Image: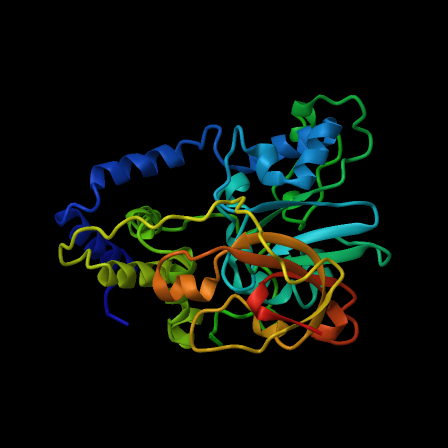
Length: 198
Length: 192
């Protein structure tokens, strides 16, 4: 490889692209500044949490989300690739990975965290998922079937976790506050009532 | 291709850095992602992945996530002529997230075997699944073949993609009591 730092190499590419009119560096700056100041209504764990909370509250939405997730969210959040929502039950738990790169339900959750892209997670969760989940502090009963989804094609996966006990009558906003990012990947559970509320 | 990127099932990487949350660690990483925007409009995600996969294995394993993206950015901008002032190539038409399926060769419940059709080109069939048998769980979607999309830089005709269910102990030995599901294109499967 070259003796240049990644920062220098990035500057070289940007200079060439700018000089030839392919990018406007001020526009790049503006896009990056906007991204840093919150994604608004765009993809983020908060969006995923709202979708999960709605599925917990609205049986018709839940049915449509599980049958055809792209169609169920199309009005507010059009997806560029196929999306499948995986329904956890007391008997079945799902966990999502991309062993070949870092495919992630970015159209809902935004950018993946560093651990999701790590060699450790990518290599191990398909071989020894129970050990990996234990590292996240999650122990599943032996009687729970564990399904690991390797995102090897363009279909993306989002886990619909189990609704926590003791949340009867909760509004969607209160429920959404319990939904963690990891619970929508399968490496965690939603918070219990009281844990996640201000 | 059998590259270092194909790491599903490898031993030896150690504990998952479960607290590692940050998407970006250095300012240049954000710029790399932003600069990829105009480049990716003129090629396929498969060609991007395939370019990264051509990193020498020792470099791949020694590089950070966005260093691998930078490697691809440098090569794709050069390949598209953008560093020498060429016109930007035409935009690539992306498939729909809900492309119609058409005829499907397999149905849920069918027993299938993963073909061992690896070439030096791009594939989305991980090594750990090749020649193993599984059951079609469902027809997942229709999407163009990633090997062709990587080779040509454009998307072809959508083909059926199946979610196939494999037994953990068949793939990884006794003690692996989980189920593994992967999405595989019709041309990567044969009836078992």
